[in-house]
Image 1 (cartoon, rainbow, N blue to C red):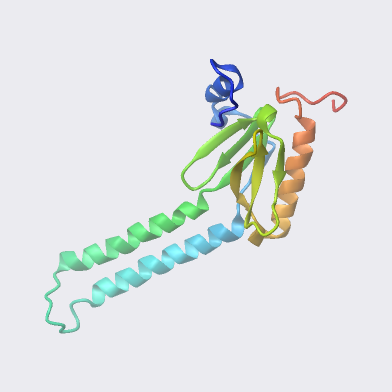
Image 2 (cartoon, one colour):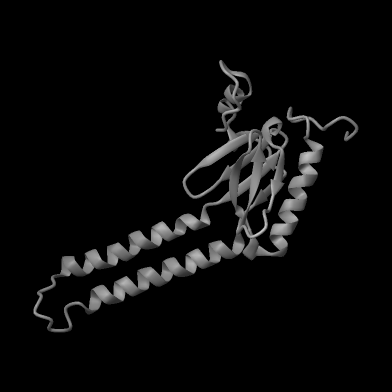
Length: 176
């Protein structure tokens, strides 16, 4: 949730009461390449740690590994793979009520009246949504490595922002 500087409710409290999962979304953007890379790395980690765990008892190293040690090594690979799969989580949803941005560990709903623009700063790996008072929310779902899909997502976001510019979930004046 973004603090808009108001006290005692206002826009910040209204954003707290919105359940993004029950809203209508006109645009849902995800990073395809990052997700594919993350899945590949996760599978690789699980395979490598499983093979390493299974080979522990074969060589005579002076250390006695038991079956539970082998299973533990494989489970470490599974845990690392699950950690890498967090990179498949980022998503941006845009609809009449506002923008929902889910990154690795956070999920934020931003009403339209707080959204100034979506930007792709020079040299940045992912887009960001600019907010009042020089604040911003990174959007890991729109990444430079997706090339054309990122451009399309930014263009659609900007078109929807023009459509819902008044922040009340209704088309802006002259856009009906």
